[in-house]
Length: 379
Image 1 (cartoon, rainbow, N blue to C red):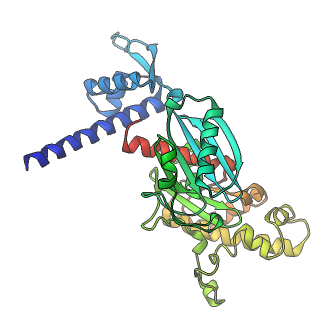
Image 2 (cartoon, rainbow, N blue to C red; image 1 turned 60 degrees about the horizontal axis):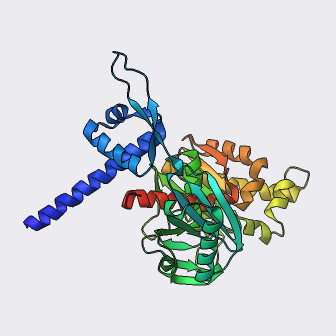
Image 3 (cartoon, rainbow, N blue to C red; image 1 turned 45 degrees about the vertical axis):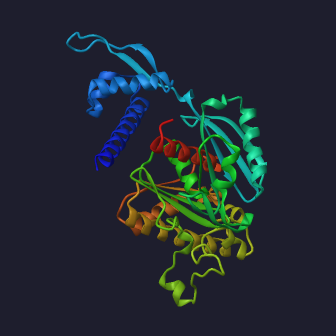
């Protein structure tokens, strides 16, 4: 019993130490330049605890000293100011798409130092070679690479790294993490591509409560609540392609494994293609005197706005970000969407188009890897 208590006590102390390091590092990153005394006051930690953590961060080059600050109001001794060192570490993000694989390497402040696009493949050895080649080309000191994040357009068990299903690449119950980890000494983390894109937008935007909608050939979403990605019990949170309403039921529409989701049949690039158009064509010709085109877009805007309003009422996000390939053409209707959502719910929400484009997935994969590494084992 004493041994068990001893192990438990050590585990608790390790957890507290890890939490303190994370808090101190994030405070320096957010409030730099900042002194040890100010960190202690902001976090309610003792000066000795802050000093121990800062010394470790200095040794690992995560932070650096910027020089003495101003004297205190009472004429006290000047405090040494600390700053965050974004070049202390790098991450590799891999966005495995149906046609391309985008690989990006960034520092800890999301600044891109390398980007390369390769043809897509389901061959793990080839993907590993793409990653190794990118790291070599980047010129980044491989000792400063902390981890690799991988995003895929399919359902992922993020705990095991198993791809539950990704028909486009022929992966089903395929453990990508187990297959690719032996090629690298760095920790690797795998997640869904829409989740990664949401994390990428958040890395730049710093929004803690956000819904990300990806409209491409299909449609999907990701939810970030209180700064955390919501994955769901079966890793399926955000599957809005399966949304259904009474009108759908009345017309005999239902979700099954044999077809795409009911909502996706109405709001997606594929929905436009079924009508004989591309999303870019109908959106670029909206309100130009073509009645059929206008009706298609009006219906699209209504369907999408109703869903966004319902998600806003249910989740109360600060912001909804719309990304994906179709979003590139949504400038002509984004104001209509905002107005309709505002009329469908009295809960305020910001709605905007994504800013990162095709880089979002790879950047988010890095953000996901950094977050997991920092929370599980200090870098």
